[in-house]
Length: 317
Image 1: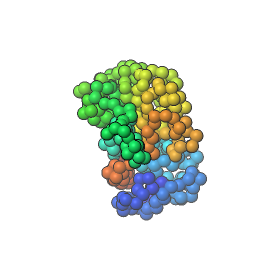
Image 2: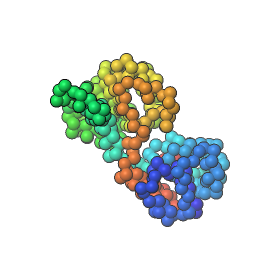
Image 3: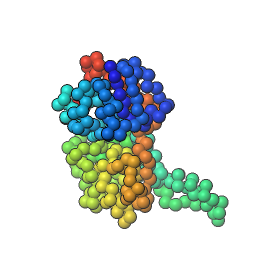
Image 4: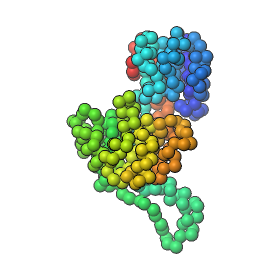
């Protein structure tokens, strides 16, 4: 049985081992595969693994032998799962592999905005401390304790963000559409998005991207944010209308934004957030600790093995 990994580099640039996956069949791993070469590289293989390749109706129709698509991520909006199901193709994903890594990154972004360690480090290395007239200097540092974080999306990651937030002395609100109970100790679920946005000093996006919520951080919802609040996004870039966020940063309505994801990755040079003030932007690294990537690969192997044994797990269609 042939197994093809279409875009394996970001998961494993060389520090992990593909051998467990190779034990399940004849393995071919490509670092990256452009859309127009997917069909060629898949050939007659029944098993595909991919992270970001777009697997739409047109691609699926060129692969009559395809029986399994293993998404090498939690999100699977790059795959037409409904059409895959109609063709008898099982699609699986990788849940819960990066919770601790993503939560760590949420607070890395928050701490850079509030404590500005990286900014001050760069300043010192630029000679500013050597030239300083005083024993210290600082720019825009503030405490987290006593402030309120609003968490949009209250699944595994959202709940863990709330737990860590409490250790910093933050008050925690959460919004999970349609749910008002079961938040856990010290966290209050708000009835509306407006309630959360208007009361939060920090808003953290921890929800999946769906057709329903695409671009929901837009001109109108940004007006609901507390003046001078901070926005953190480690979920999906498509949740935010980037033009309007850039305008909110320019005006000061939003004090700062910590972003690990953008609507297009890699972004165009014209993306307005790249030149907006008071941003901390990282290149979609929240998921990518060595430990998280190793867990991901182990789950991918387990998913495929379960499928081959006739008992698929983590099936999304």
